[in-house]
Image (cartoon, rainbow, N blue to C red; front, side):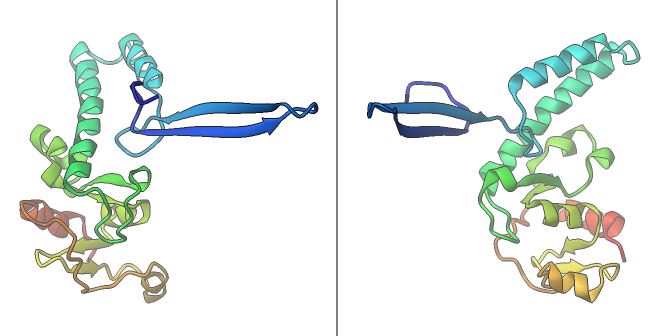
Length: 190
């Protein structure tokens, strides 16, 4: 078993069964999870079929097809590099990488080619924190304090257990300052 090449997330189910005549039978099954760059389960064969669909799409130029495939590969590398740097959500401290999203500070659509895959342009967040950050309902100062948008009601802030003006010491700010300035000035809802 240890010599097999398996995805990062693999599960082995082992069941001990007995037949009607008392014979003991062991049933084993191996489960694999394939994660894409957004934490969604995706099998490598699905990626191949997606590439085939891109190739068949006559509305895209060859350059657009190549860029789309490169972007998809780059997203996986981006997520991997972010996880290496911070393998948990610095706000919730959740460490299960199946529940973490590689969140861009400066949005993908507004980033140049370097910024799209720069791990300093991101954080690993759980889905709720990712959504709040992505939509501009929360942001962070250089001193790691959370700023909560006035667009969220006090009841929502309380229910989500957000701590305005609290510092999050595990938040990796170093070399992310310029991206956070962009986020505060262009994404955060004032």
